Image (tube, rainbow, N blue to C red; front, side, top):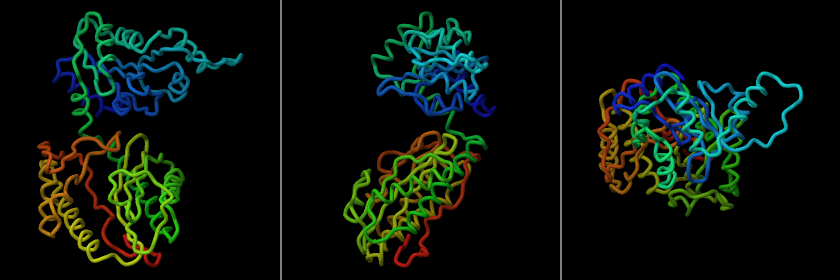
Length: 369
């Protein structure tokens, strides 16, 4: 764990008067451990990360133990639950012996494993901040009932506050993820041609992300009469002359997410599309100019909305003008003007750089983006 994370989490413990924080969601677990991609349950958490000022612990299904050991996840204690169906090699390395040691003490349930992990970190008779974001009511009650002598309080907001201010390392990862997503999307836009399907474009995007050493997330690719759908899945709908093509794509680099939204047109844009594009571009540039230390997310969003409406678009066009990114592809703040605004100020650690969405002609004739 980097010093920045340790400092932010320690501040969260102090604010909440807590002895420990327990993460349950994949992104919160990644923040506490530096490792993502654990096996998760469909509904309730099977993986936990524990932070205290003196020690950290990780609770995982037994099937994840070999990966945790092989990747040397930076925690003080690893506790598992369930069984590992594996035949260990006869010639055992130190790594294999460590896996056997952890698995030999496996707990019968995730809750029992968490209790054991808290004991290993030295928590006794203190309040524990329990991340409720991955716990259904039954799982919450089960865990609280097992934490004998400990008071459990909801802690998702404490973890969100800790994660809000990014370290230089996190900003570097976010910047790289964004650059990779932009590069891959540029390849797709240059490859657009008549007859290419939404599915073709999405597959090409995913392949370009992998080539660059990152991990693709879900790609929204919508063409023509499907561009109005908020979150469509790619289909075999083929590109036609005059079609708009809407992209909303993401990628992760070292667990951190870059997200890019862009619209292209195959051929000459209709006057209405051209007007909408220019209005939105003006709003985007105004919002970028408004980003500075001390400005709230709500102020930045309102700046964009004011310019967009002044350019002739209705307020409905400003329903969602942005959201935070980090270990999740969409995180706080999210500030649509019609639904309330975040008053949290922008900190000096925010990385501000121009987007590449300004209008220009691509090298392929007839593709404008």
